[in-house]
Length: 100
Image (cartoon, rainbow, N blue to C red):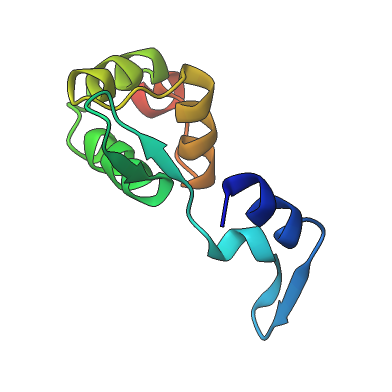
C-alpha cells in the first residue's frame, strides 16, 4: 500500500481507549529514507534524539540544528523542524531551557 493511500485511510479516524482518544495515525510509524537508500522509522529517529539529549553534557545542551547535523553524520537526513517536532513529541524542553 502506498504512503498516500495509507494516509487517506487513517485521516480523521480515531480510536477510543481507556487512556484516551488517539488518532489512528498515532499507531503507525512512517519510514524515512536514509542517505544510503535504506529506511528508518520515525520512532527510531525519536529514540536517537532522546539518546542524544540524554547523553549531552549538563553545561552544553545540544540544539535542534546540532541534532540535525549529528543525524546527518549517521546518514539520516531530517529537517530541523522535524527534529523539533520529534523533540516536542518526546516532551523534551528546548536546549536553552535544558541548559538553565
